[in-house]
Length: 81
Image (cartoon, rainbow, N blue to C red; front, top):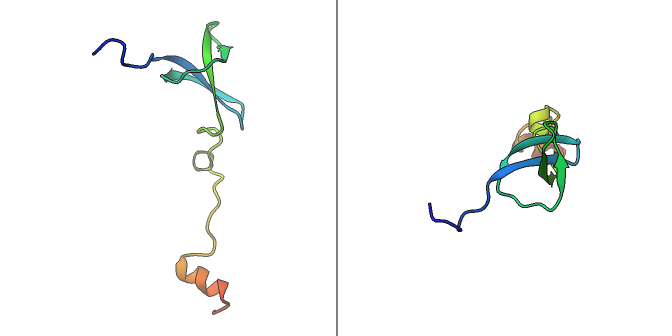
């Protein structure tokens, strides 16, 4: 690999702000915030709005479409039956 053209890959803590879930992983993202992790080391902190801890698909709290398909929604919208 060429020197100086690749971003710095290091351990980073991601914080899901909607559920206060934290996880440590490798990333090239830059952050000025830091946090002390469970192992006693200090890592950069990246705040995210959604992760697997709060996303409806992974939590099983997704809204089900009870109206059916397109035809059913059309008929319901225009009172056709």
